[in-house]
Length: 152
Length: 93
Image (cartoon, rainbow over all chains, first blue to last red; front, side, top):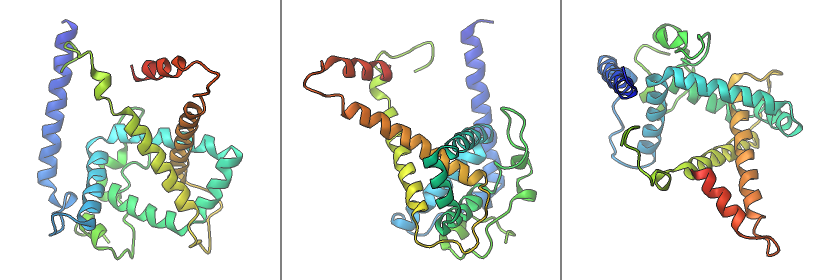
């Protein structure tokens, strides 16, 4: 088996993976809700951005978890520097960060948290609907569209 | 294009600089979040992974801005102009 055949196999596996993800999307329409009525405007732009982030995470869980872990490791390193420590204290006390956390949890459904084997999709991704924790009491028309039916 | 059919001018189509600018922009957003006037009444003592992700983005942005600033201070009349260009070319390749 030469290198070109191996690369061809990888390309085919990627195509099968894409088809599988498309099938999952069709079977779980609430994870990809209908866009706002308006074709453009701020609400549509934000909706597309958030939905794009959700698709990127749910469609590439292992890669997303890898990037997440890399940023966490860099953040911990930075927090040990004087500038990083000051920024950390400011972020922890910021209400805006709490709002952003609610947005992120609603978009990602917390699938990147919890245990994960190295270079593999996190367990929470496979157990998405059972373990997802959604931001409570958030009255936002854009986020409401991204929230699957049945979630608080 | 495939790995067995490379294009010579691939670097010309690279949006690497755009990625760096985007990361630097996100880092500034992190600083804006930190400077928010609305403060929590009961901030937790410990920071979790979410805060560390934000710190990681801020750190990357700081590195990118440092990189950009180091390039901006290089065009000194007493210094030969060719090294920055060749460095940039090498990085893009």
